[in-house]
Amino acid sequence: MTKTESKATSANPASPRERAVRHQIEKIEKESGAKAIAVALHDSETGFEIHYHADRWFHAASTIKVPILLGVFAAIDRGELLPHSRVHVRNRFLSVVEDIPFRVESGRDPNAAVHNAIGKMMRVDELAYHMITTSSNLATNLLLGVIGPASVNETLRELHVDDGIELKRGVEDELAFEKGINNMVTANGLLRILVMLADGKAFSPALSRRMMDILHGQEFNQGIPARLPKGARVAHKTGEISTVAHDAGVVYLPKRKPYSLVILTEWDPSATARSRTIAAISQTIYELLTKGPELKDE
Image (cartoon, rainbow, N blue to C red; front, side, top):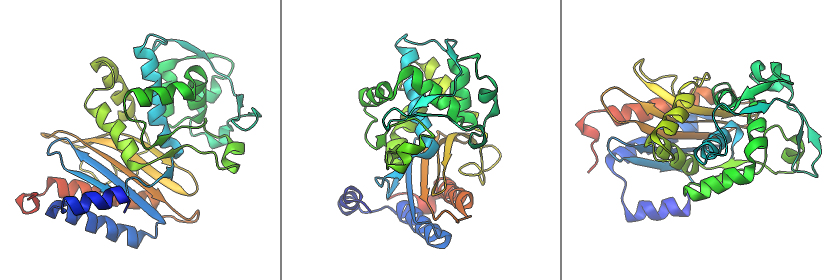
């Protein structure tokens, strides 16, 4: 528990619901063998929140693409880009380490569509869609090449969601990785962005809907959505490398307001229970939010 969380807990004793959630998360964490787990939750229906190790920093993996998406749509909102602005698809980028060129290897990128378009043009909204839904690393670096990391970070500051987000470079920059220069996030940092997007408060309602539509298109659904009922819809972004696995999204259920949930996990490279653990925590949150009056907060 962070100092902030400790102070908050002592000042505001945990409710029965919060104690139940924390107990279940602790149990799942112990049984999973994970090196670290962080969870941040905001329920728009009740205002209930959980912050479990939520200020601990993790390697962002592909969850950093959510702040980048926000930066792209900020440029659209300012009129610097249009959704149909065209971008030349190339595969040569400069490392933050001495500007040494590098490429995104096609075998390490889950999306072939963008690689197949090298030498051609693609629209900004197409690249944003591929960046999120299939986690295209090439699309990510192309968009960062257009707007720049500094612009994304300035957008985060202007929207007051920069705390808990560190965007330092593009993805697949192996030289930077070797020198410990990585994009980092906390569960609370990602949660603030998701709540703002769910509330439609980032930009215009139309642009907010576009961003959520893209997040709803996520194709990797073994985490937060996996054990939710069929009526649930999840707008989310996953992220995974050898030592971390994450999922961060907004869960929409029938006849209630959505809840925003971030689950960050760190593992030994050989661990195999990553997705199962995220799905189990998600299921626990769902069940405790939707249970009857016996878990109502005091």
